[in-house]
Length: 627
Image (cartoon, rainbow, N blue to C red; front, top):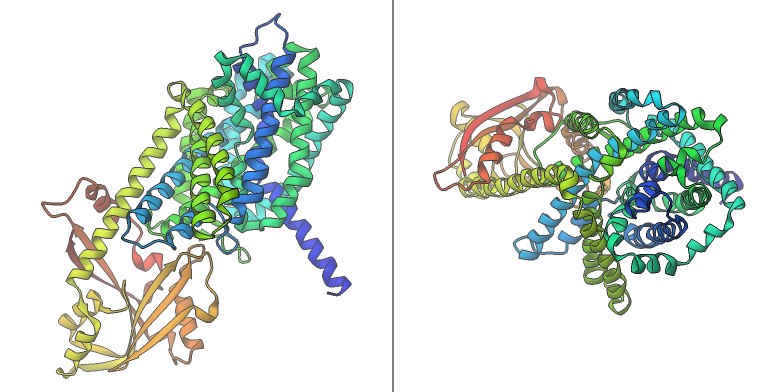
């Protein structure tokens, strides 16, 4: 490799690391605003009591939660469970299901678990923007108690601005956010470093036994403490979910060299402050800064929390898009926001859903302390599912050494279970909100998955085998008209209902007929060399199977371009696309889950729009189908 190309590669790598700071680490990077404060308050330390044991014990627990959950579990193990470079709950689910038989109980168990993990992630996506922005804006109270009345208003204005710019995409936003987060993490580290120099005794908390001993000595508050300590690792799952945007190495190196050390320095700096000034517990993060830096720090923290929120919102867009491609939810309008990164998308309905949900949470809870009670249940549940599916993939499918990794994943599952169970104690204090959202979304996904399977079977039962249809054509003398007709078909081996209806009513065929089956595969991207397979049939009919990855834009004209590259002399001006627009009706024996499915099927985005069929070339053919 030449010196210039090596330098260019190095610059690209640094740019990816900077971009990762702006998109991946926003959530976990803003945890110092509230995690230590809430955890120490959970310990029940009262005014006049010695605070140092609680500070050291909780610092130790936070330190080793970051090491075990984020560093070892996600950065070094779970992130190796990539689906051709992409990560996230659906990528992990696809990896596991691809090794199982579709009709097996194990397959459907993994599908349900994966859907639950995604639903929990969406529940978390509502809480993160609300608690992050509120915790930053509450710095107004430190500047002046009179400004406390404006916290909610300012937070909602910031949230409205954030959701308004989402349509411009991660690429443009990330370029601006990366440098801001670099300054943020540097500020975290510097603030903590100088306070640690004044009181280095807090470094005793680096010993994991300090945290364990504190829990043993205070069993009455151990559950509350562990339920709050998890706030320090929320956002750790984003490292895996956003891997497809930046790659494994940039995320790993940004964590090791920048994010992790700066987080520890700030937590320990807050601890050093509290040891000598317990009254700073009202807001140890802002009290750590000198008076002259309060306003600049408030501005920087506000920007950092907006970035943290943006990272979660982006993850929600990506997860929803993958869910559509894998058939877990109805079709949604997805807009790609980058020509370079196909995984960067904007989903307007998800954006509106999250915006309304976040505003309602801010108005309902009003403060980051109260929201902290609702935080944690969904994120710990999602982390446990990552661990469970990761263990199945690595040990059962990829055949990692079971003697070593069964105990390793067992330890992770135990830790995740502890975090989840301790957070379930917050259920009636607000934890029910994201759990309810997650359960509703899970119900929607299961109804769609179940109904879609029934619909596909009904289509199959009513279908005519393609070979039989072609044999019947030999017995008929049909008129052929100029041009190419493309029929969108769900299977390669059946005659589509749209073709049968067209023949029944118009009694003609185009001179070239293409039966196009577009499939989403369990891989994020498909190489162009294997994109399309073509089967030539009698009567100038062609069966074409086109594959797209679950992170790709399924554009029908891209499929046509591949056909032209394969030698088809297709005049795009003469193409007629026949698309089915069936109405699903329930039979008397239909189950409870089919009612919401039928409603969603009737209101979802149409196939012509979903596959980007040019509107002036689309012919929609209707019909009824019973399930």
